[in-house]
Image (cartoon, rainbow, N blue to C red; front, side):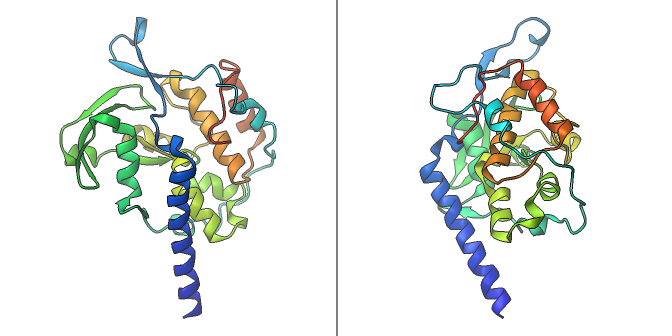
Length: 244
């Protein structure tokens, strides 16, 4: 009984944390990349994501934050399950977190029925394709990806943390993107050393977001992962970290 009450209190605290995050970090729900016209070999796509190449002067650079992350080997995956992080999307301000992320990505194009996103369009970040969704069935095919995969987080520090912290990693909007299901399945639980988005224009923002999540929750990187991130950031040295 005591364990059940404790777990309930942890979930309640996590929900309050999501609401507080919305208030303190509204940028988490802003469009995560800039629309640009494609040219050359990418002219077959309507839009693609473009890397942010200049900091606004207030955000720290992703490369600087990366240097503050610990570099260690992977811990064993023993004991990992998604239930060690969360058992489903929490509700924030009356709406499922999944629906809030979809609304964030679709922006002004989102067609809503209360909290539910019925239709809309957006520039899918992992493929760069401009996607149009005409009904709820099509929208349901989108997946909400953990930018830092939960099993990767588990092997790089999260397994040693309290459930409350792990729950925040799983439900923090900073660590969530609506993405193409096939691309997300290809990523699986890979880190930057084993998988990067096919959409090269989004890679700078992608690794910057990973660095930001790992910094926020004191997760580490492997040597190969750090080298892969540095290689990406060498193309965009002024890429800012997010929410750091």
